[in-house]
Figure 1: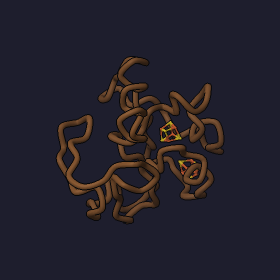
Figure 2: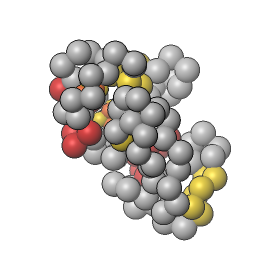
Figure 3: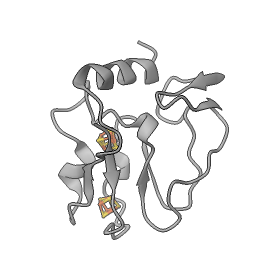
Figure 4: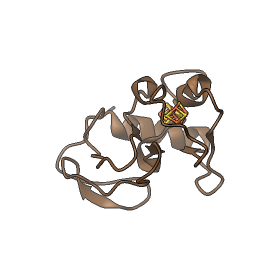
Length: 116
Ligand code: SF4
Ligand code: SF4
């Protein structure tokens, strides 16, 4: 399943550079599907959301760092474990029970994001 960041986040920023999909953003920052991926033009993401890959999207949180679910593969295909959870000093990167995905689905998402 995807990982989410809870409101216990202390905004330290340690997780952001560790994400292989650029799925992590600082609070109140617009995100883009194209950042850290090979996505171009109009794309339909795993959730069914259709966006222009280069168009800025509304932040998921205005207060703390957040993870874009459609870009999180739980690090599958890159690392053995979620890198954000591994570096977070307050353990607030946790499984998102609302977005449960199988390993196969996560690997397919990784392939979709990176044009493989
Ligand atoms: S689990 Fe991996 S892919 Fe998902 S947000 Fe954390 S670092 Fe990024
Ligand atoms: S590492 Fe943890 S506390 Fe630091 S910004 Fe990321 S989620 Fe927040």
